[in-house]
Length: 89
Image (cartoon, rainbow, N blue to C red; front, side):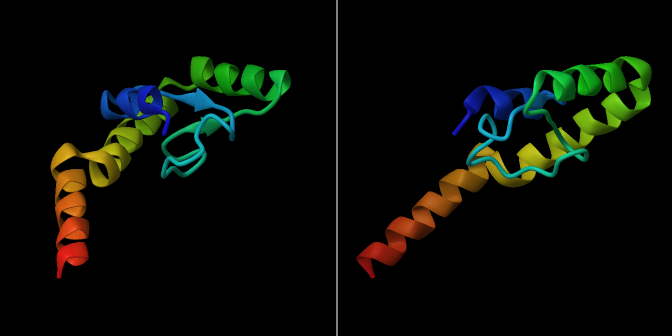
């Protein structure tokens, strides 16, 4: 898992990554993260962010909500405890 991406999402940051960079992370492209797999795609994603601050703020807000819904420590701890309980019963 790419912890730095999740940390950035938890902080409400605008994240641009490659498809490989987000492997294992729950995300929706153009909703809570931007995916760019080539230099041109990175340029376009950065340009979009520079030109549309409201879009960046929305992306960051959605990223934070996504991270809280999927990677909150309390949620992950509960899932782990539930998993262990299933193993012993």
